[in-house]
Length: 404
Image (tube, rainbow, N blue to C red):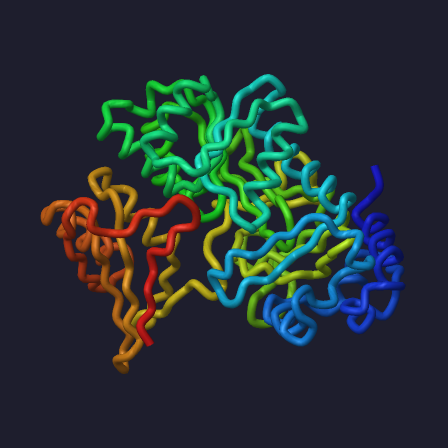
């Protein structure tokens, strides 16, 4: 199998003659080592891509081939700014499906299995790629778009599905609805759940709640529309997220200095797409905070302990305390009777404040406030709310509001 350096040099040789975005950034198409590459080539940032799209609408200048060769249109979710449009040619798309098929097989999904997709397909890449990769490898893929949650559960039951693919939030939401309509999810025959789109599958408290509600094994996965499918949980250790090193050159850096992060310390994941020649990203700062640790089987690779811990732009500082959304989520989900919650960050006072609203009884809200205070050494007000009063989500949950 070609090495990462060999694939990297092949990538650069293929794109630099025609890719105007990277012609300006990369001085040569051949490097003698990955260290030389990292020391020479600058990062690519999402702000940089946004500026390029703004200057060259609608697709930017990151494409290697003439536009008529691109047949797939995708768009980022836009949760952190204006959505980016991303195009793929047939070879790109085949590479993306290869990576998603690796996710499926790593989770033990086999041809002949039946996988249920309880969401409506939008313009971002992940759902389309997961669905098409499943069908390509011989998995019976059941689309659940355009239905209510109740009808999705009934279709899941009728289809004899054994695999579920959704966000962690929606897995818990479906379990709640199943109990309400006397169709408990633990009785539906789901054996494996691949969760993606937000942290949760690598957070023990959330993973445990999902597995208990469905009587199924949870596998975490993450990727990005502009990058592709990147990771999947280790079969041996669910706290480890394995990266697709054969498809990506993976680095972890200090977000402030840009220098490499040692194993065991938290840093920002940086990825280079080794096989997406038509719309490549070179040393792309993903904004994902991760903790690299030695890989179980390959000393040249690393895994991610605890999955994607947070986003570089998600952390808030409240009275000198760093607070990540995943840390709040883990504590909230340790209370089984909290169905939904919202977090409000008020940055208008001289000292920013944080407060939570939870769908739970008053005594649970009081207990949660006590646990938050003991964890963060910070008083965080928690208010109870009536059942059904807070927003629910099918895809990426938007629970944090920042008042500026």
